[in-house]
Length: 328
Image: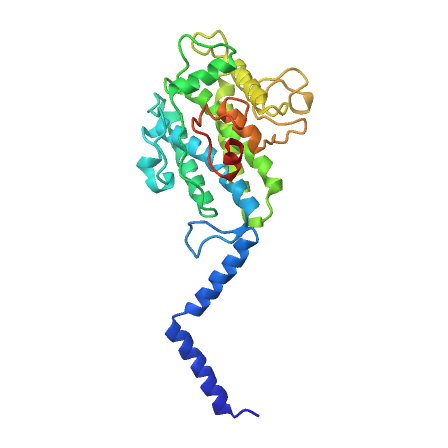
């Protein structure tokens, strides 16, 4: 039998060694555990407080990093439109040193619409923070949010090379809402598509939270445009509802995977349960949200229909392992 004083001495020695090492042995053991996990395809690169994010499989990291491209785009467009400045004026660290966006400017909005745009702006800032607390992410890619680029997209949707006058999203509240119709919906379909591919509860919870707010933003935009459905858009000879249909048709064409987008009014029999032509919220035949893959999303936001051909909102291409794999 070991004498009690021997056990007491041994315990005291262990406690003293731990104190002298300052927990270094524990830290080294944690580092070894993390290295083991990374070598087997797990990664935790978040920048959040409280000890960092839990380790995630690389596939989850990729699927969480990819939407940063869309979140950067939405944040810059909404913030510039509402406030007259973007991420660099709110929290430059979130931009990660990436290039300033092209063509951002203050939009001529009514107080009501400016209030909505301001809320959207800061919601997108929050989304960037949330994603970067779970994965390392990447710097803001070069974004083109110029009036000229939006003008090209609307002209493309109208199946023409030029519009007279050119479409300008910053000119008034209606144009801003139409430009906003172009962006958040693409992101939310990406979240719907990513969700079943995620392996961890942590990643699925994050995507569910992001999807909820992106869907709400899209619903607000569609509701405001639906109310103006018969209003004419500049001198283009079309109403608001018709223009949204053209934009949705363009995105379907660029996505190249069938109908995953619908305007504010649809043909008889194509609304919810075949009972309405009004289509204030887009959905499939069961009124479930459509999904898109990263490949489809890149084709849409590049304006080329090709995930390997950068352009549109991303003149130099999107970032992250998924997007770069198409360009390489």
